[in-house]
Length: 418
Image (cartoon, rainbow, N blue to C red; front, top):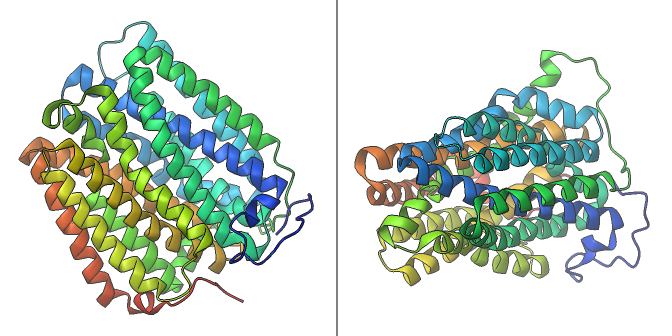
């Protein structure tokens, strides 16, 4: 489970918040993931503003999320199996490269002045295919580049990388788009190319690769494992339904343009606000990991996520909207940390790619399908009711899961299987 480079001077994870970075492989892995997410955030802000600028139809914003989610759903049996059979760092590098090419083509469509939204969607689907392979491989790789005692710390730092990029990426995307959408896509394409090179430079780690003949049983092993492990099933499905109902990212261009009247830079600030709260929480968790009552803490934080979503949806004040989003992000960070730690530590290495592929489908469903849900509801009942009702629904999901998954609620620690 360790990389070929020495893991020097390691101390217990609870005493050293930087223990994961003692691995040279993890440092490159972290850098590649940060670059990938940072660039993806630039693309997300740019394409959302551009699509809404062209059509002024919130339904099209929902289609942006759906188009990127469908590949991970359709390919779920393939992406996880590939991550368990082949080198995960190579899959990361190739996926980063494909995302860079898609972004470069978005740049080209923008440069020639395409005035309809439909040519952008095939590229978003290709972008989604690349991310469908990237997600399971990169998530499963973390346990291969650090010792077991550093996995929880590494996951917290992974979350920090994701959240820092969601702070800086949207702001950069808004600013770059304000200069020129061509400039935004160009910078994102270069960063994705850097991510690909960095991933390729990760020292080859030990990995328990699947050698069995491919069969329907091996392809479905990830689903079977999650179904047996009710704690894991409860954690993943809780995130699915809470964010499916409470997600409001797709509608932020509407808030920035029409409700709060903030413009492209303001859209970047709205997109960054959840990350600000989340990264503060993630940095706290690197030094103060959750050691007791993990299940109840997760459920409570999901309920808070729903509450702050409803506050954001109803707000017409920029400062209150940004504050609600920051608190929303902090609550969501705790849920993400607990879920990811459970999955990585409780799952055998030779199954981890397939389990993470299923998890990525659930995450994608909660995010991209949540965007589609929000966009569709907004088109029919209005933007504000769509967001507020979604937040209330997320609170209801947290309450319901206490009854449906008592094993999850009673989970005390995140040490995993011994």
